[in-house]
Image 1 (tube, helix red, strand yellow):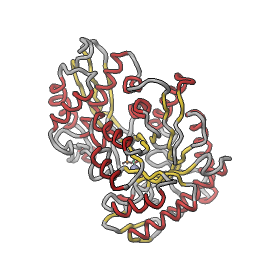
Image 2 (cartoon, protein in one colour):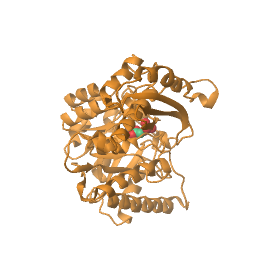
Image 3 (cartoon, protein in one colour):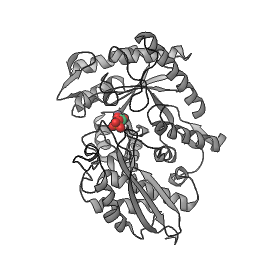
Image 4 (cartoon, protein in one colour):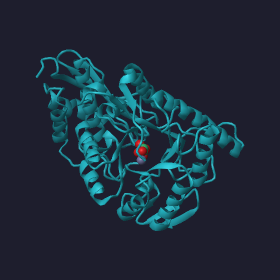
Length: 427
Ligand code: PGA
Ligand code: ZN
């Protein structure tokens, strides 16, 4: 071990996230004096197989306090890591997993573990004197930058279920660089806002949890249609230059073979819901659909993928929860063809990387993703670039916790210049 990368101290504190809730921040100091810091994100629409986001309960802050998770970092995880080599991420993460010793990280908290795991990576990169993305990169040669997948209209759990689908996003697939991609997104965001204003008669709209326009529309299809018109109004050819990505997050309104679409005032069985969704995919320039069916509806999920998987990216999120074993199972069954990668769904960087690698082995696309509860922490951007992820999803282009990530990606692209190439989606 280098004498400068031994973990000297691990300190945690409560800080705030974008939904006004507390979350865990961890600061790691190495023997050579460098430090690394990271903050745990939190999700609103969680898969049932996710690592537990440990909350205090009780009356303080609506039960959302994280004092116990903070204490676990200070009294258990920190001492377990004392003098471990921060450059050995796999060993560090195995130590964290062993210290918790539950299958779902419920004893010490997935939030305590993920913030610690990421803070150690930051400290190791700092000790090596390189940005985190470079530290995480195994190979050399050109750097692949992820294609942005950006929310324009928010829905589902992020907009008080004003519509049922959760994310109405754009993929600026015709853009040549990240800078151009985000400029196109900004044009689509503004134009879609104008379409919504024309239809509602209201000049301004609120924003949903991840910064997308509040869904001031008459139903789920109306939101997809408004986004399509927004892309056109911004001057782009829908489908070829800018396509639509939907996160259905179907487990939020479906399960047990029934899908209750409150915004459309209809309840459908799995086959009828699948048919309706396939109709939207055919009618609108949709290139990606995340969690189209509920996580307990594997057969219909696979049927959806069989129907459109050659031309549409079908993404597992609640289905796969960044778990390598679940990705292997879903790949074998043909349930999806792309993976959403969220480190806090599983608890450590090493486990998230294993799920990412499982997706790669299966020939799936990878989409590294933030959560709805976010902060100024930009670790996720470095993971996407360092691991060579195909796409990056961090919500919209408004609100500071989102722009922090896009701006970090712009900085990386700017510094790399011609050494970076933007990835273009296969479907
Ligand atoms: P969440 O949603 O962070 O609220 O779970 C994000 C997503 O489903 O992709
Ligand atoms: Zn999702």
